Length: 159
Image: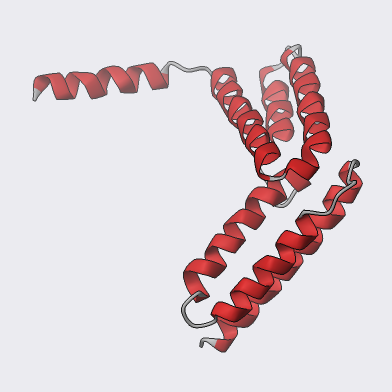
């Protein structure tokens, strides 16, 4: 039992010793890994995702040079982007979550509507020739709109 407690005490001490910069670096690394995963899930977005990764890395390096801690932390958080619908890369993760929510909530009672909606969104997201962030923003906003409307519609019809 003492080993168990000492392990958790050691873990707690290690975590509490991380600087805010270390924590933001971990968040940034996670963000880049998620973008790499999106490239695999959405190969037609690869060029734009690569551009986003390059821009985020360049902005990150620039933010690391900021001397004032609070200003640097704000810059880090802005680069990571915590708003789930702030940009197409965040929206793609949000879309995946919405699709999962539709399936989990309504697959048994509204199977046809769920399948049709997800198929429609997948067709939209599989368009070829999308190279600019503006194109991807528009496309993912359309997909989010479709999924959110269908989720709301099915939620109200089940009440």
